[in-house]
Length: 163
Image 1 (cartoon, helix red, strand yellow):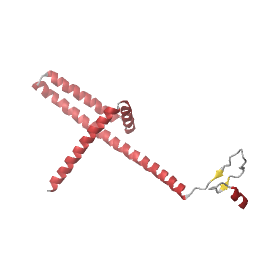
Image 2 (cartoon, rainbow, N blue to C red):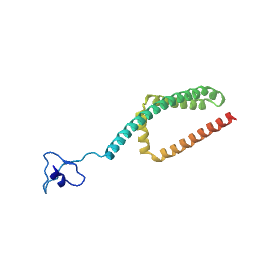
Image 3 (cartoon, rainbow, N blue to C red):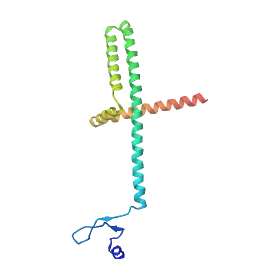
Image 4 (cartoon, rainbow, N blue to C red):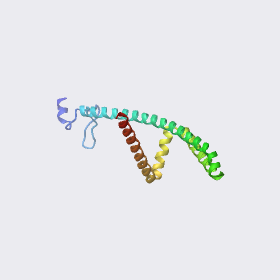
């Protein structure tokens, strides 16, 4: 075995049984995994597990957001529909009809949102971004601005409550 060890290429621990080395053939060489290889494999496995858990949590959050959004839109629809009669009296039938149409459209949107699951919404969002990236980027910027303002107002209110 010592003779074979001297003939092995550098960094090779053993030769697969039945493999022979000739000038025209490549040997199948088995290399023992190093501690570095084992650590890399462990990191890959851990990161795959964490990304799966993150995806599951994100789906859960999206599902909760869908539920809350559809409820909020249904409430807005009811509110707009309820004001239609007042608009009829104050501004005329035409404006009341606009309010009823808006309430109907909002309610329809709420029903569509309520009927979707998280994966469908995520896929719809991806498709929308592919089709119109500029609109998606502008929407993300507006949403980000609104969230920052909302957080700042909450922090400011928290400071004034402590005073």
